[in-house]
Image (cartoon, rainbow, N blue to C red):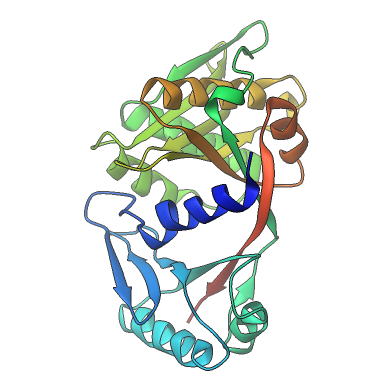
Length: 256
């Protein structure tokens, strides 16, 4: 893989030319910033920017004013190669809080090992309705902690279209892992999100099987690449499957 070329393609395809991630959301391009305004309880944030030392602070202040005017917080999704080099420091100075750094990992679907299956006694169930969404949300609360209300609303909205695939792993009738995939129309990258397994079932190959399952779906739908914002725990599994690290990504949150 040509890392420089693929990262440039990712920036153009998934950030600068981003599409709304759910019905009712909209993507706006204002003053060298691409942002999404989510639908009701959807994701609000900055996806891409083309800034330098002369205009970064003004652009940050403008986004804070804009989203504060909507009555809520938002995320600035910062990548390791974004400019200016001190953009993270400028965001912190403006009141943003950095979350743990992740690694952007990308694989070409033709290079992936996609034969991983769930362990004996575990089956994968496609999510197609509210009951399935509840299973996904319940798993996420157990795996990651916190409240999954926003996830429930977002996933329900996304399932009304054809741009998201979600799956839950069941041990008998008990949900033990779940994940989703975003399939932006016209893009070359499918995005793998939210892969989480409850603690008692980790280390058994379920996460690997969920990655392989979603990658097969993406390949069947004609996508060339899959991308993941990988935690330190998932990065080794993804590397064994054929994913390569391209840069880092850090969510910066602004809360009023």
